[in-house]
Image 1 (cartoon, rainbow, N blue to C red):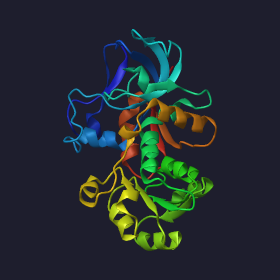
Image 2 (spheres, rainbow, N blue to C red):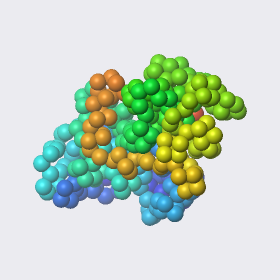
Image 3 (cartoon, helix red, strand yellow):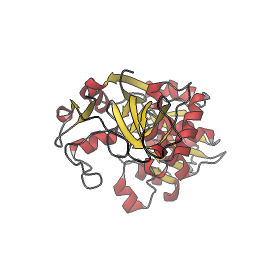
Length: 308
């Protein structure tokens, strides 16, 4: 029987388990994928702990995960775009991608370019579409200056690269450990922590046009204090600020299309977008993967891998 990640109640990492599940079958318009890689995301940890129950309640037993990359195993009735054996990547909206076999709708998959490694393809959807939507929301233009918080994180590391492609000057707020990586990708690093407001003022020359917040914790208020208009601020973490200050909150759901996925895959294949991978873990080590994720400040994505 295929294996999948499950949890039966809200809680800490120890509620996660890998269990045998019935083999899923694709219905009309669906595709069964044998998963090779599926990344993990901070939002999944929040859902598992019950922090996001009002927005994203779990139904137990709950699966986990949206990102996936793998090989088409079987197609349902009416599916002509893909065939068994095709390498694909994409997403699943039923919290089920952290598993050996996953069913999803054909329109949520695109062909994986040969140049894109499995672990990168399996990390593209959530972080990539969120970064894409965030940059699109603040509309950076050539000659402008845009700042990104948590610029070395899973979303931030992609947002800074996509923002730089617009021709804007990009300031990346991150730990000094990651400043070299940011510079190598055309981003001007700014150390986070005490004094960050003054450092941003100096780095921007007093003119900051847009702000992408991928962290929360007061960055929206900081952006407004620096003179950024609310309509040029996007946060994926501070929903109180969205309600109270009128900033934007565009994320993966607003860019969850095959066209966006295909564009991200093409950029990676052409060497124009790097998806840094912090670590990979086998599916059976999902608890260790989330300990790594929830432990702090690594560069890039953590990915679960499955054997062929």
